[in-house]
Length: 171
Image: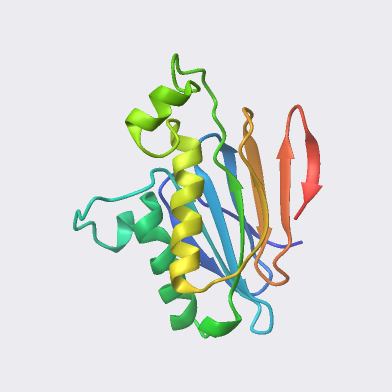
């Protein structure tokens, strides 16, 4: 049986040798599972917020923001031997866990800029980083209004998503 390594909020971890990286109770956060299928190296970031706004964070906080977590995940995987041009990605989470009065009204969303709730902004920010870094997004289970748990097999890229109300699925 493979070792299960917890990746907590704002953390980022790399795994080899068939380790399972897991993030439990994702709400508006986004789990970014990235891997090199040939080298069998993967990493998981548990992104909490869309952008760092230029704050100098240091490596230990790199997983907190989409604009730092995704590039840092790529760098760490390459340091471990992954090939940048072979990386693939799957994302999970970004739910709207709570109703925010006025957040769904068109005029309110326009006044706030991008989508008003943090889950949608996290998804958008992660996708923007993936596009900039040219890492293909090959699967996702995002949005909605329910929490999820993610188990990512670093050796084959399989992501198991489970939810109390929506069961279990593989992406």
